[in-house]
Length: 307
Image (cartoon, rainbow, N blue to C red; front, side, top):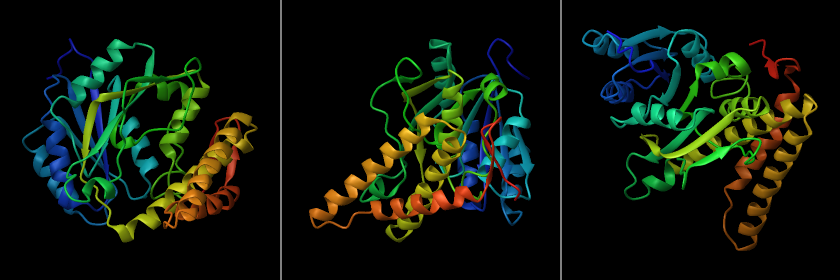
């Protein structure tokens, strides 16, 4: 039964072919102590193993809901998560993440503390930092609370492994661009694009270090070049879309970041090091060409993805 004295929070996990990790991710969210939440799992797996795991957990916990998608793409899955839930707040984490028991409680408190905040990013820390785990696990550190808005400034920042938003924000600014993101045609940056579109609508984005998630997503060294190329590809496609929508600020942001990464590449090369930035930069250049092949709807600021 819902606790109507507290707002309903709809947690969402999007998953694809990670049956070895989905059970722990689901159990960690269900262990949260906040009194009024549910959890929806959006499954794009190519086998039914994940479904069996999630439904087995659901037999003893009615807060969990399962949805199957045949099409791939994390942005599509996140949008189905929005459409399939009713919570005032929507909180996302990933299928290879571990949520602390106060994760949802701290999200609600942050929204209560700053009632004009519409998006929250929290920290994503390595689940197993020992040895080289910290260096090889995608992560996001937040040193202090910040507000990104028209007064305090904006920058591209965040990971949807620890992301929450008011439902009213999606209703006002739109949902994730399904051409972007892992599994989509343009590979990544669906979260950056959403935050930027929200910023354009005067949304306040909160960065809160006290909201943490542990990421069991170590990539081995041989995996990182492809990951960095995907990041660069999606980032370029995100910036390019808004440039094509005649947004000079997006052009400036993209040029500034490309210059910054290029400078790091040059400095590291001059010092005799092997700069990993080359993979990001090569992906970025390819992402410009990739983005040009997809139509843009200037009214909605979304790619017109026919896949």
